[in-house]
Image (cartoon, rainbow, N blue to C red; front, side, top):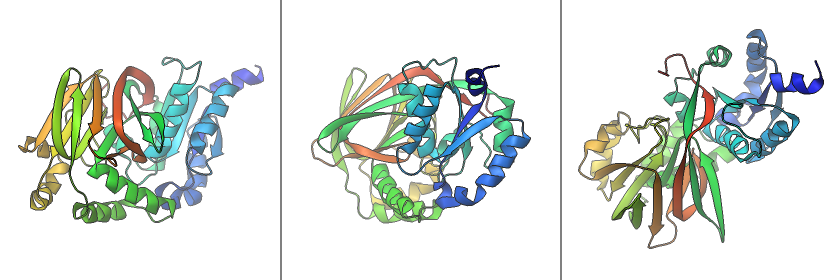
Length: 319
């Protein structure tokens, strides 16, 4: 067997040592041992900072790797997926992506019943149950330039983006965790001001005075909030939730319902499904995050690539 075939048959593991408040720096030897024990043959590389997972994955793709594991949070998973989807020779049937979740939110893994325990997550990858999920694509303004990104889970705008931005600054300083996210959520309730946006959902146009807006593929973001409770990740549709301008007391009263999905029944909430969503804001600064990563500001255009990426899912997820 030549070297190229050996590489193709191995997994390539992208490890974010800063994930989980730098938890992986300590725990990687345990994960490494679990992968080996499960009979998973692999090479690996450690990221050194934001966007480095894209570079590492791209280099591995050029060497012939087709099976990838992301060890980290939703942001690391997003970067690996972006490298795959932008690869010239990418083929949905030939490439596969798995996750060992070690982030602060782990919302993509929550959707697909990926266990948080390392050995169980490794066993899930070894079992090989897979799904071809839809992928979102969002274009946005990044400073003075147009930019774009694929996402696997949810793009959040408005209030969600403010909370994510605060949390990401803390994570970069090694201080981000689930508690800090919840604290940022509470403090942002007193700071965020609703914004008027123009939204085009397929052929229908709306004006919303918006507190928060979510567009995506899966159900959860923000560490377990069920922002898109009706989302099906392989139905070829984007799910959309708009929370219109709402009083602070109402938001506080609805916090519990954010985690159960029941908040969508509130009269200030509108839900849709779509193939394409366009968003413009009358004022600058209507921000966006995707898969927990702070990216840019409006105008946004969000489209869908149906069943574009094969991913490893948990045994409990119905295929």
